[in-house]
Amino acid sequence: MPVVCPGSFDPITLGHVDVIERTAACFDEVIVGVAQNSAKNHLFTPQERVELAKAALAHLPGVKVEALTGLLVDFCVAHGARILVKGVRGAGDFEYETDMAQWNRSLKDIETLLLPTAPEWSYLSSTKVREVATLGGDVREYVPAVVAERIVAKLALVASPGKEPSDG
Ligand code: PNS
Image (cartoon, rainbow, N blue to C red):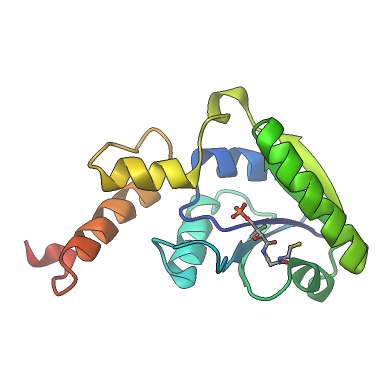
């Protein structure tokens, strides 16, 4: 039976990769659900986030990446999964994730396992990666190489929407 690792992944970070690698070491089949969160103003489109997550997780044979639309519990049922795995960085995440876990168990009896993130990534978030990159900082230490390249290209495109990054 597969387990699901859901998230917005805008973009996928080395913290996410660590949690998914450790989940894949515990479960044979892992489905990464890349969600469209209407409350968030995304940098990357859903398709781009799926593509980047696939590239970042290509070394893990038991891991599949799919777009998640609608309710997470329905995504789980559609994929024959009863368990969600989520990384928690600290008390703030724990409170948020406990609330979500109770909703998901109440809606469709989906259980949530919380995995503490590696201490070196306890401060890492996609939000901060986007902020640092937007302000011209180097994010190569925090994201897979493919993401670091794409974020620079994406920000150049956002800054000059009429130009392709290769236009010079
Ligand atoms: O990485 P994030 O942004 O913290 O992930 C949040 C996510 C995608 C797991 C959450 O927004 C979600 O479950 N979205 C799917 C829609 C849904 O089921 N919402 C009701 C949850 S009670």
